Image (cartoon, rainbow, N blue to C red; front, side, top):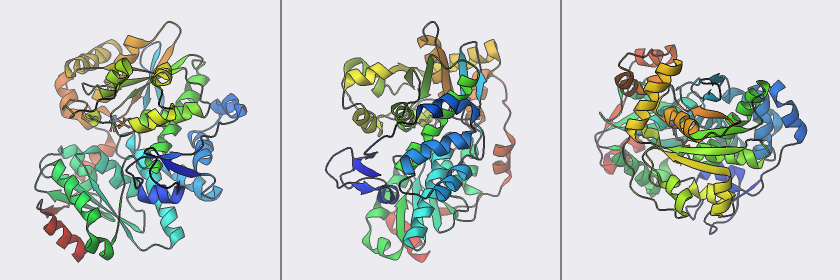
Length: 433
Ligand SMILES: *Cc1c(COP(=O)(O)O)cnc(C)c1O
């Protein structure tokens, strides 16, 4: 498969180059040149297939030309070693729980898939050890660290701001050991990001060690998220509820919903989508006005969606031939304040017993507000509520249970490398590695 850049100024790339490089030379995002439609009999029979079987069929359409079947199958089956059930919340609203993976959030699938695909290409190239640098304010670091854990040939450095990450988040990447090193930076998230950027640009460092990123715009991280939507459809079809299916995606950088839109282009019969935003309403405004106006992000209680310039907007725009009307025909929007999110979490709990996390709550509310008669909605519960325990506990005025998987991280021993925010210190450290 050939990949082209959304900015149109970079040469086309192979899958291998797109995965190893991440971003195109012109800073555009890679798009597959073709999106293959899946055969009707796949959809006719989908409810009888397992999550892995469904995902492999989808993965084959994107990656099958470049990765031998046995390798691709091994990557898919290793990535999807857990379930994501559709759970009934009300008569016409279901929650697709994407929090049964290692770090209890939906980014686990993309991170693991990317780790394994990158490993496949590095082995093929006979490459020496590769070092992944990732800056995190919390969630990305844990997904990437756990996705790459134990993948030989790749070492991961997670840079995070000292004292600015919650203890529950911190333990998910500081207790792993093996090929994961946590670097605790005496600074803020932007300092961590600056250290990573400087490292990629430093000639001496790049001569000393092979560096790469695990950015969320990488095709190997974002495309596998489409597996979720095919599986959700299969589950709803089994229940006889898939005829007028509306899928609502709590969105920040728009990678997740973008993968769903790729699924629709492949023939997945989802009637329409809703992109649920928190107070960062750039996409919501775009739908209303046709103007895309990025701005600084504002902090909310659904903080994984605090994005003021969603990077995957470029992909959505490209996918719909840059047509505002075409985008509006498939996707509507919604936006919620922190107060509304809190009210939804309270109301859903008291009405149904279900506990939403702040991101999923935006999704639920957008369906509640936007479903038409006859439609059935599925929202993506993108993280386990215990990942945002302080927030959710305060809203519900109770102490929600922490799943065993999260408790296991909390029992581990924290190990991190203390670092100043000066690049010279970080460089000296990497050169000594
Ligand atoms: C990353 C994230 C989102 C937003 O996903 P995008 O692909 O950036 O739109 C939503 N919820 C949670 C919990 C996340 O971690």
